[in-house]
Picture (tube, rainbow, N blue to C red):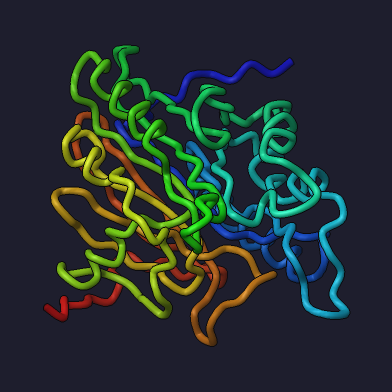
Length: 313
């Protein structure tokens, strides 16, 4: 039985993460195979220390007339993560709004994820909203904690009758994060991963210099539950990473935190002509409260400097 080793910075003091998002895997059809080839090419080129899937790994929602549904979600998920598993790369996942839309519950999917040899995903405290709120620690060369990775279940649709739209990260999840942050022995740099963007993703585009593309509205929850404010107060999170909006890939800094979109990875969903699928890369350096980030696209292009966008006000 494989025993996963602790996540540790390399000898050169770096730790590299590949973010894949919105694969929308259904059943292994042609588009899914394109998605798989993209992931394999990215992982072979970048050789990351960790892969993070930020939601909508599979698509269990409605399809167009004449199209086939995802009928075997557990097999679809297994196929979707095989690029990381086959390469023995540790990986973690947060669920999106389409992973458990029909056919399967979050708990059932999580139970399956826990059986994968290279998955570091955790179900998280059962009393919290959602499934899969957890923290991973990165060790330094002295064996002590050197950085933290937080994972949040951002839900699906609002469950409050008078509010329509997407769900939000709830008060109990935020309290869990702040408690963990306070309990850390020293202030460690942290990254946060979730599927649905926070309302502040819209604010940063309007108010700060951003880098990248915004081809659609920020499809966040209609209410602001305060996670970003909690992160500002705690002072540990240096970057957040989401997906959900397939043709946005920008990042910008707001109150000392870099809000980053991933680059949509899956071919089985909407996109935009000329906006190639890909992955976001993230590199931490031990002892530094910052990170590098770049994009690697399906055709092998590496984008280190995304186009600059100046705020409108």
